[in-house]
Length: 235
Image (cartoon, rainbow, N blue to C red):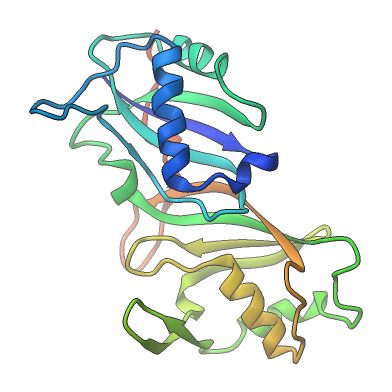
């Protein structure tokens, strides 16, 4: 049985890195007494894979990992047992069964993600900026210097900003998140305010990831669906 587990990560645990989060869930799965499947060979390991690594310091309401079990277990039971052993700030939100080859691996499916960007108290720029987002997006190109492992190169990030708007006092963004076009919300935020001629102070804002999507559309027209929606509940 292959399942896709959705969880949230908020509060101080946002400073726990990706590899430590993986190790944490390996231990939690054992504490929950789930019949997890292991790989073969001399060094067997749990068969699990995480969708999109979350940056240190970023909270999230929509993280995913796939897990293989040696037995069939009701998905609601998996959610209940896992959530019961979570630490403060981490909650297991849902479990869905996914079929191999049909739903694909969570990591390879990721195409986009939603974010909230919110200024910390006293850090918001005093000049008017909230009515400038549409003008920023109206540009045919938004060129930035993007660092790679070996060098820097100029790229146009405009095609990778699927949505950007003000929601209350927060900036909402839907950005490309595939490995080939992964676009950080920090990059978009800093580029926007730089375009306005504003240099933000360090740690001026916080970021929360809201959801992660697969793209079931075409090159001409996107059709985003949550990774959760690609699975089904099992009684």
